[in-house]
Length: 241
Image (cartoon, rainbow, N blue to C red; front, side, top):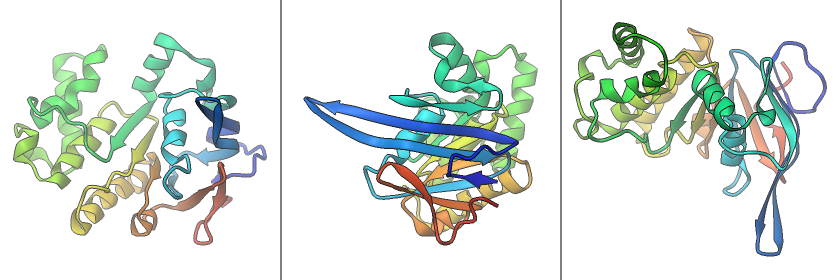
């Protein structure tokens, strides 16, 4: 279930209402998002498309609590993200959000295992528990034989798999993927998208992805376009189902 009309929908995991984001450049106001509404149910795979500067990454940053809106509200489950600040918001992000970026953001002096383990160092898990979580996440990404490899010893596709393993290792509520295949060749991109799709279909994860690539967007259950700061259904999408 995905809706963009702002009507109340029972059972929404993510609920966005009247979201505005305005930036100031000198005396000029730049309205990136205007009155945006969005409902996403658990287990959905949503792709956001739109031209550069349309606010796609801004929307992901707001959903993940990395930025604050100028107006409006974001609710995830029972938590009103836009009412949080400081340490509480940091803790919420660590528990509920997995981030996947275009450039992987791996630490080059750490092995694949150590990169994936990083988010767990902020938890109360024991060393043995952390190891089990990391091994499970890397196994899901097909990297059980690459745990001790450093980023420089991996292909781009393998680096992105490590980044996805890091994003899911703490079993977050949802994943935010910002151009996750933008730096990959077609074959590697399709492999990564297949893995993300499997996280949705086989493990019930909720995924929200920004992409410029129509072929990447086709992997999603729903395609939405940002136009003039608001979301609209794609003709190929199935929003509202």
